Image 1 (cartoon, rainbow, N blue to C red):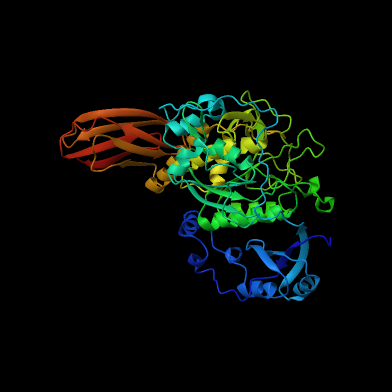
Image 2: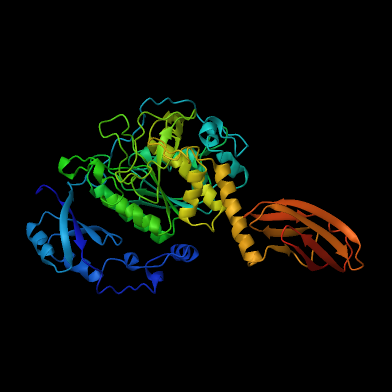
Length: 540
């Protein structure tokens, strides 16, 4: 492999680092630290940056350029054609091993021809402006297949949720009207090209722009994205001119940056299985979520509290057939493709993972998906690359509605809402999620947690006291039956009475209404269930 100029240097440890676990503010953003605190995620050694003295030694070993680092994997990406330097690096006591990872990169700044036409695509019409912000136009069915409009109509459009989008470039996103909304409202927080180590992503491949349009387009009457008010980091990690494992390293480096900046989600429409040099190729047994560099990085991202969503792959009608990395990663959502009639796309990769986990996890519209083309017109295209952002945006909206739930809990609700949850298959996994059902599951759990806090091991509590226009009764018991409630004044006169059916084991809320007409004073609330009777004293 003497022709390679880029190498991975794997380190043994992080000894001698000036950073420490107790002071994460020096290497993590306040938002990233807050995410860890909110969800009970501890800062550990994987969060610590690469030991600076190790990097200095590598840089000084000869004609060597350090291109990037991964603190999670404790690896350094270098560029060199100096065999003496490589030999010297290999002898450092802190170096575990070195491996070639890619060929000579493209000339920096070299213009690439963007993807302008999709397989079986059709340009439909130029956009028109309407006043209704939720008029999805032709994209209506790819939202409604998940009842995504339920979240949008409730005010959950992704606002406040930061999504890092990983792709091969975002060609002309700065000039296309579909993105005026996120540009003018400062929703594009940062752009970074990890391939060429620059900040601009507007010049390269258009694939990421297509995916971004599915998330963020806002053209009422033509197309509304699945998370039109989310904030976005646009990261180029893929070089379409070649296919080498170095792109996996870029993916991991981008994930680390997303985590450090406080992003809540990663939407990635990328995947890896075979390469330009067959000696790097993976096989299906390696699709176990642990063997590949990119899957290990995705696993770290999930452990740091982010929701990682990745396309399952378009290998279903090819010789490979199965999912590709990092879609094999546990604790992320990998997404297969269907059309709006819920028919499985022939190209959508098969599961399960090599270790027999359900993969893909879910499915969304990736067959005849509406996107914005490089001309700003509406078009259709195919690929799990498109099914992933369609549902990823709706998951962001769901998390906006329930920010107290961690990534695993949101993912579990999405799976449980899907139409094949009790009978998963190898094409769509748990099936097509329904956002109304997922919302209901999380709302029920939110109410349960709140009730547990209120009840504190008692079976009934009421609030507020002093009472106002209405009174809320919180109730829980292991037996079903009837809860009878009566309200008396101090003289013992019955003023109101209610009766509610109770469900064994459920935390239930009952409303006692029309109490505003009661005069100020003291009252007694008497309740009776299958366990016994009790009295609660109230003030007004």
